[in-house]
Length: 234
Image (cartoon, rainbow, N blue to C red; front, side, top):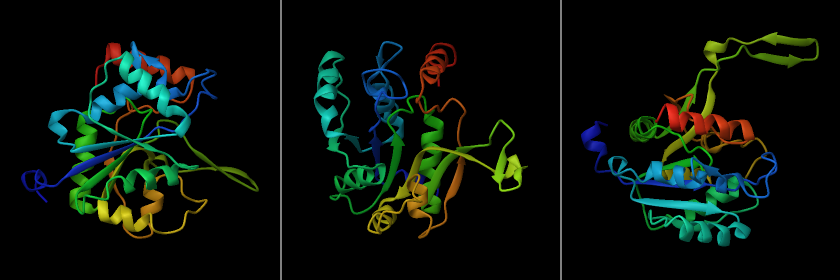
């Protein structure tokens, strides 16, 4: 499908923000930690609110015990970006399913699922992933590993061909009815992301991601994200 044709297709996003501050060593969930003076989650929300991306509806999935904290942050930072807050489930799979249910009024379109703690995703990556989902049904941003990779075995370990491996990022974009069908299937322990939920039903197309598209998990990630924001704006 051409870019001109795809511009008429509805776009949605489900931001999944269910993390805690455990690995960050803080008393606040990592999505609420300050990054360049604003909450991490606000940066993420702002990425998808860019008018050029034409996202029609943003669903923010939060654990029930974080709703009040987010409301307070919205008031403190005067956050007026349109979004609908949905209560998450016990697992990421359940949280995405709850977010998807909030889009039940939309029979067609493309939906992105994105980590709430990936605040630096370039708009070009988001656009390319939406576009690829129009053309292929399912598309995921990914990058080539920078380091050498080895696989463990009973005999020790052996090298893998790095050029044939990818590190998966988000956004992960899908034709919305395809994602609905995938989430009607039972949850499996092998599900690590939305692509793994969908791949039994449909091939996954890979889109070139960006090394700046960090998932903030540790204190070091927060420092790197701050440096990227101030030195290399995405």
